[in-house]
Amino acid sequence: MLFTCVLVLINISTVLFPSLFGILERFGITLFPKKALDYFKEAVDSVISMREGESNGTRPVDLLQLMLQAHNEELDKKGPNDVVKHGISSMEFKGNAIILWVVGYETTANTISLTAYNLAVNQEAQGKVHAEIDALLKKREKLDYDAVHDLPYLDMCISETLRMYPAATRFDRICKEDTEVKGLHIPAGMIVSVPVYAIHHDAELWPEPEKFKPERFTKEEKESRDPYAYLPFGAGPRICVGMRLAQLELKFALAKMLQKFRFVTCDKTVIPVRLQNTLGNQIEGGLFLKVEART
Image (cartoon, rainbow, N blue to C red; front, side, top):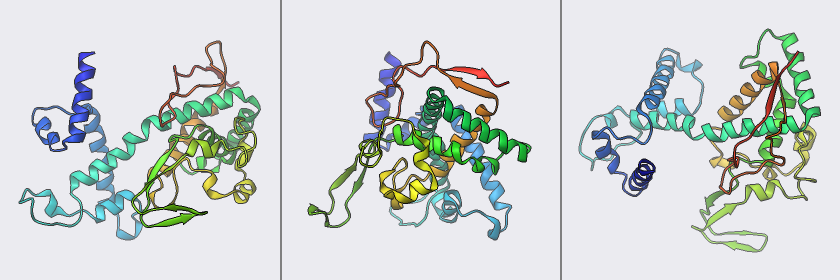
């Protein structure tokens, strides 16, 4: 209990006084386990080395590459703080790369659990996913990066889970200029809160919103619907930068599990599942399912 209180105090203090990070670091105090941070640093360094060995034309245009292009080696050197320098330091782009992994860990894990729950409760949908995976494996030798992009029904099941249980139940944006929306005046500088959960459960947009219906996400259904009716990762220029990574993790993890197993409910399964009263998709009391080997 004492350790938890100290950790909370350190977190609050460093948020209010960022300069404390440097002081705490000198005493070997960090907010995350050093072993875990070292692992991610080595992973980022490995990717950077791979990029440096590629020609400019073959390097993918992603967030890491953009940060590498913005890297200013002058910022890595110790010097006077009053000198204005453009770009980012190596510590900044490595830190941002690590954040991409860290911030998406819990929400992605929760979405995997909730998709497994939806499939366990809806065996017909799970049967369609199994059939899709089996058919794919007949054409391909294994489930790899390219293969998981060829599982449209599994993708529909994940999308429907994110509709029912969005990773962020709301997000905020700052209005940049005076705006009027359907007679409502929004002054510049006002914070606008977007109620994602409420939108995702609006019966006018989603008939029977509490029911799991993957078919809501067929190509025809998506084209007939307002694109802002579905906001699991936000929208516009501030859309979640980790969206593609999260989608890949979700599809690959679930496809590998469903290749060999079936999810079913058990005595401990709470139906309907309950979420904690937070801004995310944390499951209250955990989620219990039974896993059966496929024959």
